[in-house]
Image (cartoon, rainbow, N blue to C red; front, side, top):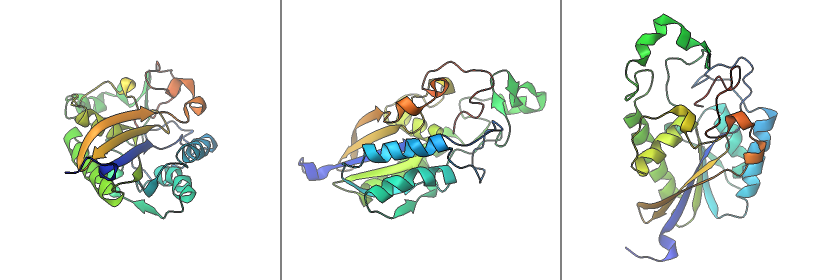
Length: 228
């Protein structure tokens, strides 16, 4: 395998921008959840950040918030936006419910049966299944943009899980400690077909509300729909 720069392909996996969610539900895969005005600003900021990069392929999860985040990036590079269902949010039995600090679904005994196994997890799509589909989506993007750069827009949990897999961390984790802020970029660099480095940047960090930044302490009544 050659070591020249034509063997280097960069795949940026972006989390979508802020979503309009006044009811504070875990929206998961539900349709009809669009970017807020702030979320659109985040998408535009990242499009500007990537405007000078050699992006030749842009693809998004089929959910509206991901499509709307990816659109200005594709437009900035004169590209058609592709869709890949493998980038979709993780399935979750609490979808459509409030699920936050001090309130919501966790207070209801009927839901406790879903919490018995945090290692799989028992409340949603198995972590290993997320790894398989996300790695396949990354590989497809790498092949589509070989020698250049690709941007994939997905969701917090699948992004964090595939990064954890690549960096050889355990897949079960504390959701509050995910390093995957709104509109962040988790960047996988390939040499040939092998991932050789992983990077992380937050081009829209100044637009992200403080309580939503990675590692921030949860606040009652805010960010009920974490993991999106």
